[in-house]
Length: 248
Image (tube, rainbow, N blue to C red; front, side, top):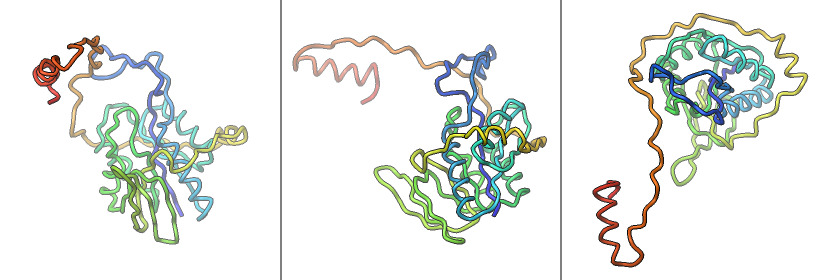
């Protein structure tokens, strides 16, 4: 069985982000990049699936040369091969999904794992779009997964509870925190990752359907103020909430 895991090269969540001079991108100077945290759960589940069913795991990443570091991390964890879809231009979720879907189809993968979202754009729609473009089934925000032949039983988070879904291959699974505990790359894994192949391809990224017009930081938190100290302040408090803060 061929298993694909889609990974993203994202800024470390501990990085202090600065807006670039063009006000449409971030200033990358001093920014430390890592594998998208949710994608680590996807990589671990792909490896567990390989161990159970046998086969090959290929990591697919859309990005520039610096994304090789993220692919190497997946290879060190145990992924067999890496594919870098090279592209330096900004791209939205649909163009990313089209590039991933084309490569997944080319690799003839039956099951695809993704993180539920990337921590940079947080759109949380690439797994669903990719599945739709491939014509695959899709289960998102998965916290427990069982494979039995062609049958897939997945438990997913929903608002206020959990839901059990039954589906079948081919399928795209988006991983949520709690699905597993990602393994650490061993020294042996790190050394062997240096010998593993990262295939580089020029990505055929389609035109984006959306454009970033402006990036800005949220306004600084305003100091608190005391409206009053007894019930006589209720009327003024309601007025402030309605007319100034506009939450009621």
